[in-house]
Length: 117
Image (cartoon, rainbow, N blue to C red; front, top):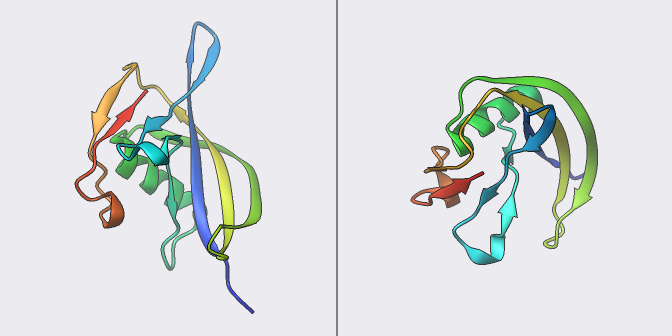
C-alpha cells in the first residue's frame, strides 16, 4: 500500500476593522500563480508542527499561532502521487499589507523571492 505524502497548508488570518484577511503570496514563476503557504511534513514531524515551520520559512513571520485544523483530505496530484493534506487556520498579528521574502526551506524554492500580501 502506498503511503500518502503529508502536506501542511496554512490559512494565515489577520483581522482588520473586524474583517478577516487571508495571507497569500505571488510565486515568481507565473504559472504557479497566487498561493497560500504550504509544505511537506518532514519525517518524525506532526502536521501541526510542520505548518508553523512552513509558514515561518515561506513568509518570514514568527509570531504565529495555530487556531484550528480546518480540514484534512486525500488528494491525488496530476503525477499520480497521493497527498494527505492538512489545512490549518493560523492567527497572525502582522500589520504589514505587503512584503517580499526569500523562502528559507531550500529545495525548489532556493533563490526565489515571494511577494506576500
